[in-house]
Image (cartoon, rainbow, N blue to C red; front, side, top):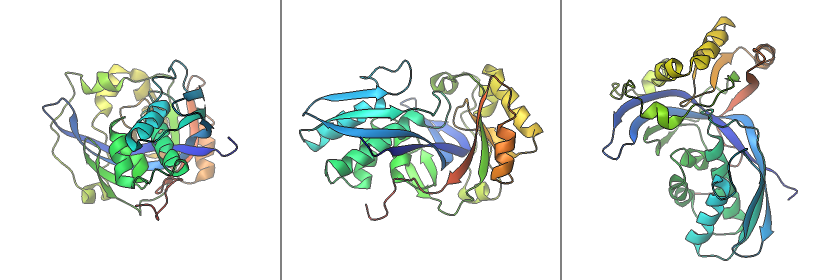
Length: 281
């Protein structure tokens, strides 16, 4: 267990709800970018069929933990006899809209696919990951991307600015289910394009609903804008919000001044997941 593997957070640089499917899932357009803020996972061998976890998010049982579920899913799918103990150093907040649980599951699939030599391709791992959550495949895809559908149709965007961001969690957890089932949520925004995004169309259409139901999120957005940050907005369904700083020092200075009931981090965008291996297909 001496090697730690990162499970990085992501930001939604834009997010647009453009429809709803008969199965209840929403049709989205979004842009994912990773950031250098990550949980850390360690893996050690256990006898076949034995799966355990230490660390992890408070209140999430071992059986419900996405890392344990990911390990079991890979073992069963590959038809192998393996077990594993997972130790997690958890720093990404729950209910933050930055993909913490999904990223943990993805890193588990990536690392165990290598350690167990199951030989799954990236696409096969992404298909497994989709069974665990809609955001899991992007972390396995491993590159910044334009996403459509429910987030599974991915087009790499490898030249996005790797900006310095101030990321703020305003001390609450937002229920993704609550936001997507809210009757006041507009579900039929006109579709956008990659070109429009690159030209500055970066809004998150969930933001008004989230701010109305969780006023503290709106307070955090207003505070970040008062610090002269650019492109301040919600990531995912929240609760985290972020803005673009001029440089790393400016990001650190602003992050150090947030109200005491909030948490904040100075982070940097990454167009490539730290576990991405271009030799894997």
